[in-house]
Length: 327
Image 1 (cartoon, rainbow, N blue to C red):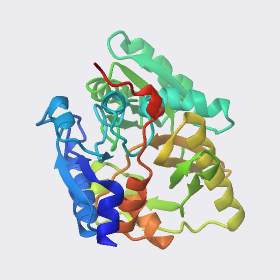
Image 2 (tube, one colour):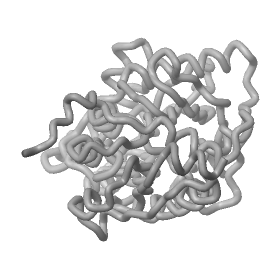
Image 3 (spheres, one colour):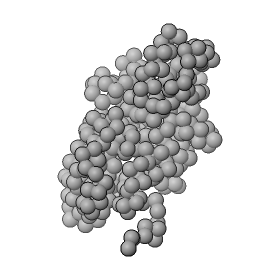
Image 4 (tube, rainbow, N blue to C red):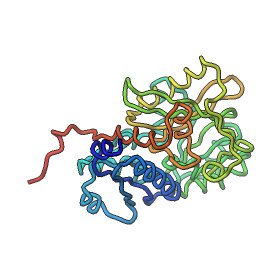
């Protein structure tokens, strides 16, 4: 088994760390993936794009890479484009899907056009929005509402606004991270997440995870470090509703053009049990608290085998004939 995997994958780079606001989480994810692949006999090596250049990445002559980067410069299509140029197959969605999913606004627009519901939203300019405009938005959406930096993840750059007096502080927090601020209707209810693995018609949803954070506050601390958050997998849902949510997840995954693997997050409205898509994560966390490994384990796949399965799906979007060697 060890020899076969080494022969199948060749020299593998695990890309983690990076320069985004999610560097700390990426370091945890990448170290876990690296250890898992090495334990299976894969010839895997660490590579931190924040400390080494693309020229050094090319010089390593990796046969494929596992992307364990989160956020900007790793999950947003920029790195995927560089890897296409270098001709190095990589895990996860390609350039376009990565860029779209990293933008919560574009994700919403595309998913709505494919009959995947999302909360009501508006987009504000980080530099040009006035205090009067913020108060008008508060009246239009009703309170509470959510403010988000739409190009960040891991609950970074997000604020729940309970009353109009909190609009400016919440807006200023999100504006530090992004050129625009997403205003989103607050959905009170259950939080679910659905890992999806594969591509196109072969894409399949893994068991649903329900997240129950203290006081419903699934923030950065509760997501990655606290033991107070409860995770129920499979989520306690009836069979028909489970299939409905999984189908919505696969629909959203394919609508955005995802391949390989991703995680699709939903809120289920308490008042009528209706689902609303929040976002798609194209390079989900792989830490000890992460949800994709938890779901895969319930489906019968341990962490190490999950890493191998994801690595096996590494690919280039361009056909080999399109990667023309220079003179």
